[in-house]
Structures are given as C-alpha cells and as structure tokens.
Figure 1 (cartoon, rainbow, N blue to C red):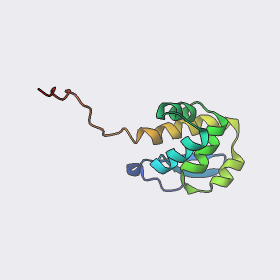
Figure 2: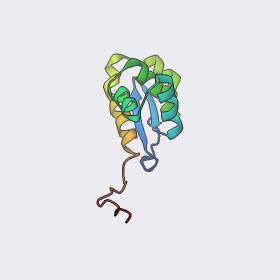
Figure 3: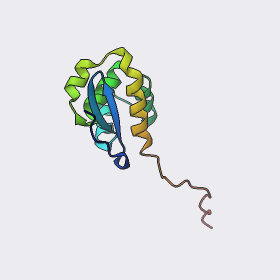
Length: 111
C-alpha cells in the first residue's frame, strides 16, 4: 500500500524492498544526518547522500523518514536499493532550491 506523498512539502516516495516510505529533507533531519556523519558542509552531506554510501543511506532512512516503517526498511535494505535511495534523497534535497529567485543583478556598490 503506497503512502500519501505531499510534494509541495518536499516529500518523496521511497520503496525499500516491500516497505513504502515517505522521506523529506527537513532542516532538523538534515542537521541530524550531517551530525551523525560528521559532515563539514552541505556539499559534503549531499555528496555522501548521493554517493550510495552505506552509513549515509542508513542514517538518511532513519532520520529523514516522515511516514512509513523505517525500522522495517532498514531491515529490508540491500545494495540493490541504494540507487533508488540516492535518487530519492536527491529529489528531497532539490526541494530546498526549487522556486528560489536568482540574484540576476548584483546590488549596487555603496558610494
């Protein structure tokens, strides 16, 4: 049974084996993953989440899951699931950058 996903809140569906999850890259969740992995920057965190690293994948499932049985997902986790996990983490992270206005023109220098 698939879980409801609210894309407007940055939620992303993830299936690990036969376990459905909904993950979201909340600031609290990202901070917890970053702390656990001892990341030095957002770039480091992104690289570790997208690089199919075992510790990063397991931490993210545990700390970014907002709905679903994360313990069952961690039990079911196999190497073959890492690509789907990496893709889901990347989609969740992109939500933080969607809709941001770009600074097309630099602010004028103070005179």
